[in-house]
Every structure is written in structure tokens, then in C-alpha cells.
Image 1 (cartoon, each protein chain N blue to C red):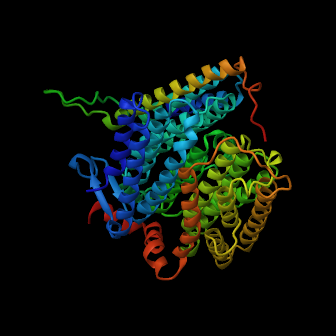
Image 2: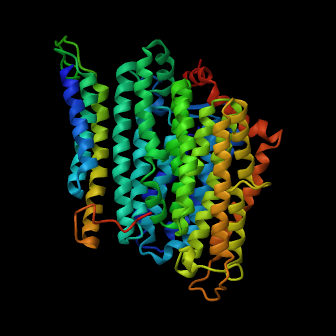
Amino acid sequence: MIIYLLCFVLFLVGIYGVITKRDLVKIILSLAIMGYSANLFLILFAYKKSALYPILEKGVDVPMVDPLPQALVLTSIVIELGTTALLVSLVAKLFQKYRTFDITKIRRLLG
Amino acid sequence: MILPFYIIIPLFTAFLISLIGGKKDYAAVIFSVISVFSLVCLSLYGFFIGGRQILVYRMSAWDIPVGINLVQDSLSSFVLVMISIISLTSVLFSIQYIRHLSQDWKYYALFMLLLSGMNGVVLTGDLFNLFVFMEIALIAAFSLVAYGGRAEEYEAAFKYAVMGSVSSTLILVGIAVTYCSTSTLTLALIAERLPALNTKVVYWIGGLFMAGFGLKTAAMPFHAWLPDAHSSAPAPISSMLSGVLIKALGIYVLIRIFFNVLGAPELFMRIFMVLGTVSIIIGVFLAIGQWDMKRLLAYHSISQIGYILLGLGLATPLGILGAIFHMFNHAIFKGLLFYNAGAVEMALGTRNLKNLGNISKLLPVTSGTSMIASLSISGIPPFNGFFSKLIIIIAAIKSGHPVYAFLAVVGSILTLASFMKVQRYGFHGDRVIETKQTNVGLAMNGAMITLAVLCLVTSLMIVPGIKESILDPVIAVILNKTQYIQMVMGR
């Protein structure tokens, strides 16, 4: 149980960062932390005590962990990589235009 | 089987364009027009001829608990028709509009990726596959919002991307909880196994998906990104985002999950109604104060999404009829209004209502079609918006929610007021404007006239006889959860 709670705390750290940080790069890092905690949730749900990696071997007769969430996590890591790359390139362009990383100074859109 | 082609055609076109697009100027335009036109034909065929029964396609012939399946029922084919009509007019409108921005083949490649992502979300019958297609559509949408390359556009795209990532993470956690409790990802199997479980599981799954897809729908507490993103994007993309994307990724998925999978739980229906009514009122109040035409339209999207959510939350056949009918109508008139704003911006170089005046002589097609669209969105008969809003209001009164009905009427009156402002200052003002920078071409006018005609034609969908064949099967799919399970499982 305690491990799920710790994972939830990691998720909250990510949300806290997204809401309170003013630096664009720190916002991206907080988003990444949120994504990691979601992936960790998936892995934890599939975990069984004293179970092996999900590869069939001759002569090994121990229960395996569920392989599907691991495949899902691989996919979601790739998706997060794409989104993060896009966000970083947007931040680079924003820095060229505004010469700052402070989100409170980037506000030409109002209303 | 026609189901995979909805995804294959735009995806293949996207890669084809990016392979040969840099060398020939018009190749990208020709390929995307052909691809979108064939999607229109395919979706109309699927709706009128193939759509009488549920089509299920098993990818690589794996059976259901193992493999991923694509499902096309009446609801999916209805949404597919909506997507393909708006994307055809959007591509036609883009041909001239995008040319003044550089390297338009990149634009068309991203557009096709957006389209294949949306078609995939609408067709898939698997929860994680839905997530993947949603991310394809979203990444294309983020880049298209930033496409113009001005500072404001990067700012809007950054906000949109941050909000989109937060909502995607919430959805991923929701998928994790669903898989943990039901040990399957196929929507039909989840629907079958959920009633046997603890009701708290339904609340967890519903809460996480409500927050995640509510952010994509831009219902009221989650709306902050929408006005920036939709007003900064190029005009044809604004109409794709406002007209189709928030419905395919938001409303459609909410319907599929909360009606077909969770079986319309009472608590969430009440949340739908409250969020819908709050969105109607606050969205329209924020819209009235705007002077930027596209920003005003973007706030109206929030308010009109409120009507759809209110109709869904009533969960009566009449309310759902109003909701899906209004979803289709909103795609058409909001797409048309964004084209008008784009045409005005291209011809006059501004979209600030204070700098506009009387342009009914200068741009007759634009001002004429904008009048039709304004009348439709504010609910004046005989245009389509009137009928769908009327049905939602009658349904609210019939199921015993007069307060919600009253607030919906108030929202409709305020919508009329704000569009009188657009017409008064923007198109029929005192100051006659006589010079324009560029001509509005044939394809742009054609796209606007097509949608203006559709504003009138789609109001025929409510006529008895046509309603039974078009809208009633969709309502039957939404309300009948067990039929969906049995059809998908092939029993």
C-alpha cells in the first residue's frame, strides 16, 4: 500500500510543479514527472510478489508478471518523448521571441 | 472491409506528402484534396449503405480478448461524416489561405496526421488504442496551432500543449485503473465486467476520465486553453479544432465511455448537466466582451459545447437527440464562422471588430454567409441551430429541470446579442471600406457557400421520416449498452 501512496505523492509533485513554477523548463520537467508517475502506476498494478520477467523459458516454472502493462508503458514513454520534444522546441522558439523563460512575462494573449 | 481505410488513407497521404512534397509545389494540395474527397465518399457510403449494422474489424485476425478491434456503429459513422465534411471544406479553404505562409506541404502533412488521429479515435474499440490515436491527433494539433510562426502563436501552442499533456496523463492513470480492475482494455469487455465490481471503481474511472476528457472538451472549469489556441491557429485549423477536434476527442469519447461502457451513472449525468449549464452562461458572457472576432468565436465554442453537455446529461432519448443534432450543427456553423473570420483577415489584414465597417459590398459572399451562420448559431428559424437548441430546451423541461432550461434560453438570447454585435460592427457598420489587400478566391468562397447551404439542409434532419433513418439509430446505440456489447463480441 505504501508504495502506491509514494507513487501518488510523485504525481502530486508533478501537478504542484505545473501549477506553481514560473520557469518554462521547470514546467516541462514537472510534466515529465507526472508522466513517470502514471507509468509507474501501470507497472505497479501489474507487479506480483516473487514473480519473474514475462519471458518463456524451458525448465522455469515460476509465475510471470503481467506483460501487457509493460508494453503499454513502452508505448506511452515513446509518446511522452514526442510531446516533450515538441514542448522543448516551442520553448526554444518562445525564448527567441520574448528573450525570457518567465511565464508571467509571456502574456501577449489576454482577455 | 472498409474500416482500416479511414485511418490508412490519411496516414499514407501524410507520409507521401512529406516524401515528395518539398520538390513539387502543387503535389501536396492535389494529394490531400484527393485523400479528403475519398474519405467523404467512404464515410457517406459507410453511413447510408454499410451503416445499418455494426461492422467489427479484428486487426491481424486476433480474437477479441487478445487483439485490437475497430468498431463502426451508427454513432461512429455519424461522427465520421461530420469530420470528413468539415475537413474537405477546410482543405479547400486552405489552398489559398496557407499559400502566404511558407512551406505549405508541411501544413498538409500535419493536417492529414490530425485527420487520421481523429478517425482512429472514432473507430477504435480499444481503450489504449484510443489513447494512442488521441496523442497522434493532439501532437499534430499543437504543431498546427504554432504553424503561423508569430510570438502569440507559440505562446498559445505552449499553453495548449501543457494542458494537453496534463489531461493525457490523467487519462493514462484512468486507463491503468480500468485495466487493474477489469484486466482487459477492450471497451465492450470492460462494459461487460464492470457491473460485477464494486461501485467505487466506477467512480474512480469516471472521475479520472471526466477530468481528462473534460479538459479536451473545454467544459467550463477546464476551458482556459481554448480561446488562445483556437484564435491563434490559422483559420482553417481553427475551424477543424473548434468544429471537429473538441467533439471527436471530447464529446464522442465522453459519450462512448459514460454511456456505452459505464452505463450512464446518475452522479456523472448530474455533473454533465451542471458543467454544461455553467459553460453556457459563463462562455457567452466572456464572449460578449471580446473585440477580436476569432476570440469571440472561440468563447462561443465553450458556450455551445455547454448545450451539448446539458443535452447529454439529461440522459433521455429527446435530450440525446438534441445533443447529437447540436454537435453536428455546431460543427457546420462554427466552421463557417471561422472561415468568415479568416477571409476577412486575409482580405483586410485585420480581424478587430473596431477596425471593420461596412464590407457587404466589398466581400458579398463572406458577409452573406456570415449572416446565415450568425442566424444559425443564435437559433433563428429555419436554420439548424434553432431546432437543436429547441429540442434540448424542451427535453430539459420535460425531464423536470426548468432552471436549466431557463438558463439555456438566457444563453441563447445572449448569443444573439453578441452576434448582433459582430454583424453591426464587423459586416454592416457605418464606415464603408472600399479597398482590400487580396481577393478572396473561388475555392474559399466555395467552401463558405457549401457550409452555408448545409446550415439550411441539415435542419431537414429533424423532419419525421428523415429523422428515423439518420438520428434515431445513433440514439439507439447511445442508450442501449447491452446491444453494443453483444454486437462487438459477435454473439
